[in-house]
Length: 434
Ligand code: HSE
Image (cartoon, rainbow, N blue to C red; front, top):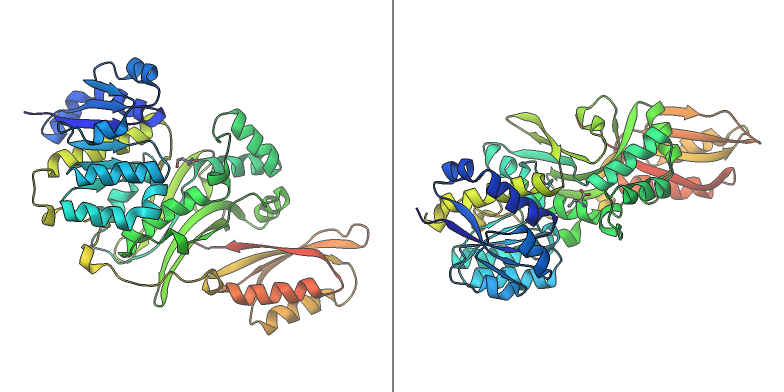
């Protein structure tokens, strides 16, 4: 049977892993796909490196446009990352009638609606399992495995770098800066770690999960994004004392009036399985009406774990390529004319419980003033921790019941105005994940 000819754009870590796994497991993969899948052409800026890795590829070039324009290529695998060049290459590949497999979450979170529309017009597949949580088949699970359900929310540890840093801060009492330096030494964090530590990478992934979970267009520009750069080790310690862990979560939650789409550090009960996901591992918890809660765990990055997702998409493409495009699994899980325009809610409307840490003068009436302000905003206190006073000051930590973000904002503003409160209030969000 004629093999599926893959044109690989970029043979770095994931591209190399894809080549290795496709070669090593060629027979198993072909038994599943119904025909062999082979790397036919490779484009990479580093020709020597490409030749060293892709020894059996028919064509090796430094011109990616030659690959997306090659009539012999059936599927383009885009692994170069970034926005502009990747967008141009993917749209050209689609225009040339080629299916596309991509690991590029940034591209799809920002340009996904345009790319999926172009793909529908040409009747080609754009598959992106590798874009979210690396080797974990979370796209397949949300899009197909849970198709019977009304999905209520998705909450994921979907950035390994930040999870590694948080584990180090907690286990070794390191500051954020020290833990980041360690992650860079070990090769977990990039030289420029901005996308990871500022939560942008997680927000790209959460955006894609929200779309396929709820059947809405991709809307990265409406996501609330907050990273871990301002987290202090002391808050991880206090959270622990209260029975919580702090994780950077990507959350997509459906409400009657819209969707909460947000990435930020969150306190979660230490007894939840997802709270115990440590180091660079990823995990996604999905709450759906029929099945209840399901949890998906595994490696979210790395050569072979990500290649596993890329190749699963290639197998899907091999099986579906000859079928009627109208009867294929839709790109965003829901039929394209059935996407809803449920709005992404502004963060002020988000509802979460809160962790508040403040330093106050150790004198009578201060806590009464603080709790009065919370009561005025109809915020109810759930738990309370006060440290030993030192030099006439003490740390007070409060957990509140759920409230709207704007209620918490208003209360924090007033608390910071109290003369007995020293400096700023540290506020973190808390999710029970029940
Ligand atoms: N940089 C990401 C992480 C992997 O740390 O999880 C690729 O999205």
